[in-house]
Image (cartoon, rainbow, N blue to C red):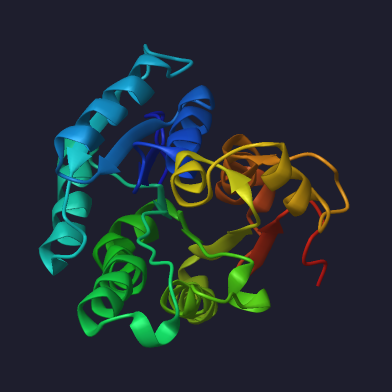
Amino acid sequence: MTSTAPRVALITGASSGIGAAAARAFNAAGYRVALAREATDDARELAAAVVATLPRPEVEWLDVEADLMDPAGAVHLAKSVAERWGRIDVVVANAARTFRGPFFETDLTEWDAISHVNVRSTWLLAKESRAHLVKTRGSFIAVSSVLATLGSADALAYTTSKAAIAGMIRSLARELGPFEVRANCVSPGAIQTEREATLHGTGTELDESITAHQAIKRRGQASDVAAAILFLAGDDATFITGQDLVVDGGWLMR
């Protein structure tokens, strides 16, 4: 699509962590950004805080809520963004749900919830945004995890879902490539986010236990992952598709 209009990025899980950092990065690059989030008061307040810190507030943005447990959520997101701006150039499927505990203590309801939010909604977002991305020769980017390769005790359902995303991206790249639409994913390592603090707490002991595995001896930040996502979406990556870009400070090294 040849147009002078700003490019449009739809980012799920944009109210905190990697999604929020990606929203700021795309906004700084001049993209109109749709910040997709859960339909809760907490997520609404967090999204408002993200909007307040966008580096280029003059560039249009959209705060849109959706329940990705519901198949209609992905449909609503793609439709809302396309109706607002008439195009979608980039989709960042970042929203995720997790559960910590032995695999034999994960009940069916929690397993299904993780699968629906992490895997099914990624597929539905690709499905619903496909026609728009074909028109713009756009980019679909999902967020996997190094755990998909390393494995993790007490996170089997989450790890399984992230491995599924990496496989999904390779198939999407095959199907979308003939239309010059690219599909990639990023696999973060141990990134300092609000979720990490909730699950594992904070402190020097935690930081040292993580950096011991890394070649780069500092903690990874959400902005590090956002920079990789922005690169994959941009004009310098137009011949890159079907890839899993690891952003982990040299932990996995595959």
